[in-house]
Length: 562
Ligand code: GLC
Image 1 (cartoon, rainbow, N blue to C red):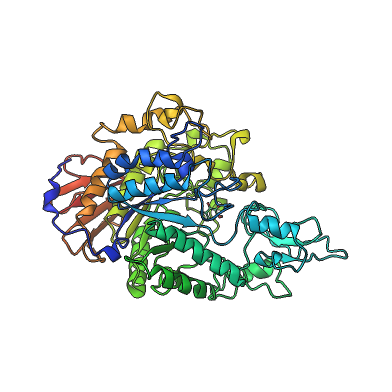
Image 2: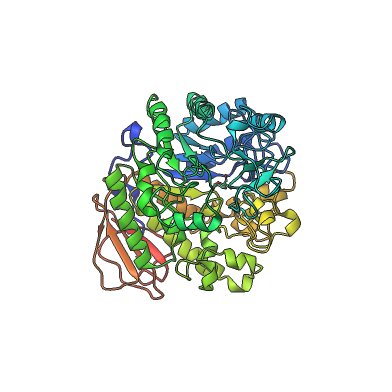
């Protein structure tokens, strides 16, 4: 591999402060599984602070912390018992302030996760609602209904929760409450002004503490139309396909009235606080969330759901850049997060049966493989990682912001073999036999090859780590020039100098397995999705995902040229 000095890349990457997010490389930390400073088996805030030098060296612009608030961990922290505090298992508010100061001092912005659709059933308000009477103000903060059937013994509707099982749970006095996720996650009633005001208070609380932005969990679910009669499950599914805001539960236009209030609050700060919507909506509806009068940016999961394939990648990029242009947001890109099978693993699986993906029958989302037992012999680890490195380098070359998930910089594969007794994900418990859940991408990181819990902490990690983590450990990769960790470091370092206009031109080439794009600053990205090596266009290779062979770009590889 020929490597030219980074100095050839001369664009000023800083941008104005208010726009820091537009082309930021954001690293998602799943706090419980990042680094355990107090040696109780659970990652914590001080653990993150201790790794600020690591994060800085990686070359990131921001970190996004998954929830660290007080929680019973019924859904890995997405069941929040107190929105304006730190889980005592993870630390204190003072620890948070110390971490924030250390991150800021290292030049890293902080994004925190806000979970507005539901609280934990341990939240004081839900406990109050349980103790209160039917029709009380305390119950009106959530969604309580009488049941159906002769004596109200049946739920108000036949809706299922996202994690499996019914979406309604009955309480002692016979009423039912709605939970789109686990029963420990009762949905808030966003028609209630008190809820709206309380979340404004929460957003202000963290903004005042120096948080730079927010990731909004299930952003498309807050507004609901629960007027009677409620449609049945089949009716819901029919409405869902219309993508016109008529579904009573998801993606209603009214949700943006909530976000308009949030935006006004964000804009009171200098620079304005940012927000990115986690909204699994049709592409045609995403722009509403990304609008500058709403949250300002929205996750685009299109690449994450696509096969490693040139035509799909090209059309996804073209569509999303056009959309970003139209809304004034920048596009987002992501391959891995705490909810999906890691991309190194997805790309190493053979094409799976249609059941794995109802849409096109070929997307290798990996869930079917996990469910079938995660057979290692069906996984080509090397090919998966090679493709993942190529895909990541492709993504990091794109204009827009890139969201990375902890551990992908180590090329980690999904941990497929987890005993039932060790599993934590509610999707596993509520969906038995249908999916195994998301624990396999949430296993604590390996920092060293030989220490207890691979340097995560001095106690056994809260999810078991496999023996092969030793080879992927930070300590092993740190000094290995061609490691995935060093590939990420080099790519992120180069990227920092390359934040020009948010556009690209596709450069024609005769090979349908090859994508080549050029950015206005002269930076070129070439990805070979095929199985044979290809000639590279003229230019100096600044970085490649694997070494070139006889000057050619090998199969499943990306090169950056200047
Ligand atoms: C989001 C989170 C996921 C969580 C769910 C319910 O999809 O990413 O982890 O389980 O919301 O809060």
